[in-house]
Image 1 (tube, rainbow, N blue to C red):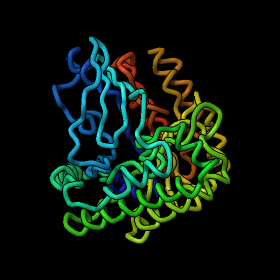
Image 2 (tube, rainbow, N blue to C red):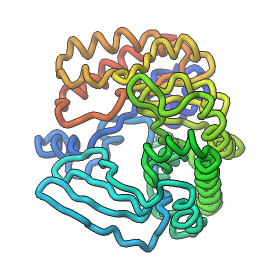
Image 3 (tube, rainbow, N blue to C red):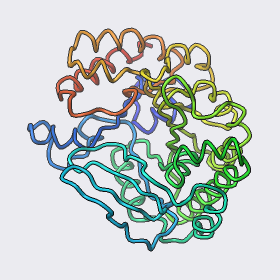
Image 4 (cartoon, helix red, strand yellow):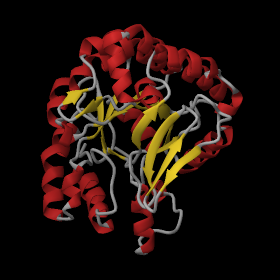
Length: 362
């Protein structure tokens, strides 16, 4: 087969159609690019998609924070951390010296009353929630490079946890499921309404990428029944809108979410990403179960890259790539994000060796 463009390749991978090679994409912690720039491996502010030849380019153009006029308030600051209350009236602590997931400290919204008073009335599809320019620029950049261009953003579970935190959301699922379902449905409608405006003005992307971290180690955050009753209708609505436009859907989830996967597939997703090994996800098992009707991105244990041992990296790739490429539905990606402890040469080797293994001999 002749060499495909990245846009052609990913479009075909998401439909499990014959391709020239597996796809390539990656996420990095912000510290990693800074480290590799300091070491002279990449230029300052260089596009990593250009540098490594990634097949996808993403744009995150929506702002779903409740109060768009709220000026984030610094409540406490030390040499290493900053405690901030944001426009969701949520208090988060973040690290100043390195990239990390914010610590959830406190929330104004802890129940249905708080949601109805402080958040829901503010969730209107205002144009200022859309960064038209960022979407336009990313779409043009992807077009020039012939990369697959995906609108990206968070879906409902991921948005809700930023409003009331995991604890109150999960307690709500048990004690007041109608409240959590209302939050999910409201955010799904808001997202679709904003997408409709954006796509009408700027044109469709090639696909949709939703971030939706629904699991932790060895368990999803909810039972399959809770997922089906509370979250699934919102997934069906938001994913269904994408499918009505002919757009394939990639859904990211950290953590162990295998029990939820049948429902996610029924909602319409085309590709699962990131398949976190240390949480208990098994790429080969998932491939054998769902590989004839689902594509995969990730599932390569990033802890192997931490070793910077090329023999271990080779072994991890050899154990998985030849198997999961068989249905033409795989994109090479670590099972999380690349930290600055991974050497540039190690990651470069990972890419080169992975694509060599993942090239089809037709």
